Amino acid sequence: MGSLSIQQKIKKSRKSNLDDLPLNEILHGDAVEMLKTLPSNSIDLIVTSPPYDEVRNYNGNYNFDLHATGEQIKRVLKDGGIAVMVIQDQTKNFAKTLTSFRTIVDWVDKIGLRLFETVIYRKHGTEGAWWKHRFRVDHEYIPIFLNGDRPQYFNKESLKIPSKHGGKIMTGSGNRRTDGSTTKTVTRPINLMKCRGTVWNYLMAGDKDPLKRQHPAVFPDQIPYDFIQCFCPPGGVVLDPFGGCGSTAVAAKQDRKSTRLNSSHIPLSRMPSSA
Ligand SMILES: C[S@@+](CC[C@H](N)C(=O)[O-])C[C@H]1O[C@@H](n2cnc3c(N)ncnc32)[C@H](O)[C@@H]1O
Image 1 (cartoon, rainbow, N blue to C red):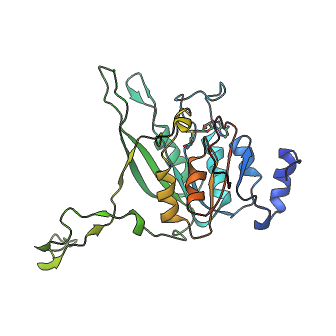
Image 2: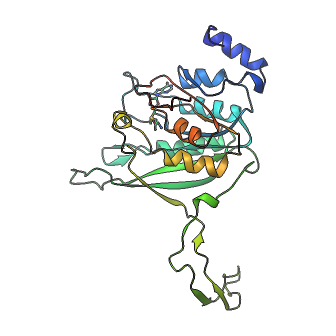
Image 3: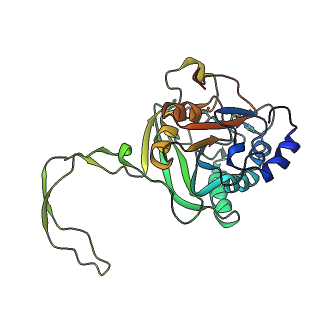
């Protein structure tokens, strides 16, 4: 589709099928316009972090239409596909903008995606804060949106974490019933590994990569890698509409899955040479 104008590509995408989906490409352009060029029901997983509030100035442009982005994301996702968004709210005059929460409600109520879960990205190694009247913010939100009734793929094995008392024998009562009573006391070994909770811990975003650190707003490669392992079926298609320096693409390539991403602003190139 290289020499076609965006409008021609959008027109063509309406008639296109999965064979027309460009694989392992960086599509340069505005995210919403480029999403419109992709066929419907073609993407397994989206892992992205959009521009929001006035946190960063991209080419002098602060405002971004997150509603239009959500509409296109819903259209391109397969049934059971997942969209993951890393986002925080800006603080203005001692109050949060609530863009993250508003976007979640908008995408669920107005666009028809469903909120599977919201994970907290606990950022270790955040820079010091000099404000006297605010906390140092060391987390972001990761709402996980589901298109359809249930995830088409879910495998949390690689996300398991060590159990503190793994290998010991535990004696205790079981779960509490709805009426408040508890199930009978049981004795059983504690598994060495347990299911991860909803607070996910990562080192700050630079991945010890001086090139990656030049981008002002990246997330660590491990975030998309974890979501790909959990929600993308083998051979599935991963997309990041706000590709930045390509963290999602790098993670998808590590996993030998197909990636496409588009961004109007790719200041750095760190795609693997095989991409
Ligand atoms: C929060 S950053 C995402 C960084 C990315 N997750 C990474 O780890 O490199 C948002 C990105 O969106 C890009 N962007 C800004 N406006 C855009 C637009 N209209 N269309 C596509 N991308 C845009 C910015 O250039 C920036 O790289």
